Amino acid sequence: NIEYLAQRSALGWLLIAATRKGVCFAQFGDSQASLRQLLATEFPQAMLRDAGKSATGSRLHAWMAALVATVGQGAPLSRIPLDLRGTAFQIRVWGALQRIAAGQTRSYSAVAQALDEPRAIRVVASACARNRVAVLVPCHRVLRADGKLAGYRWGLARKRALLEREAQPAGATKAV
Image (cartoon, rainbow, N blue to C red; front, side, top):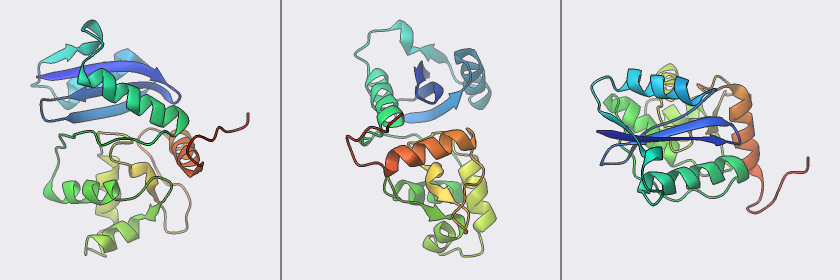
């Protein structure tokens, strides 16, 4: 069983979904319907339940509120339990990404080096691309070796916005 909740965020629609173990899906999209369809495609055997039709006190509502605040204002994100599914190497990459502090970045090659797999740069990039939990596994913090933005599953504009918000001091607001 997977419970999900969709809400508008500063970066567009955001849908998060969780099993009993934790969040297994957190993705941005253009519509609630397209995200719901993507969730069903990613987890075809799961029974999906819309948490938006339940009480607002659920853990999913609290996690969504925290994620929306992080995306919108750069608020620090508290530890949210995850239920990650991938290959053993993908899980290692995602763990390494979670150790990159907000406001910092690493290159794909630096992540590969940190995993003692210096030649696995493309595999690291592939693991980033297969990340199902935006922001919670912060693949947006990984850049090309020259420091430039590289592909991001949810678009370079979102990646740039996330990095800019994280670079601001806590509580600061960006002038418009």
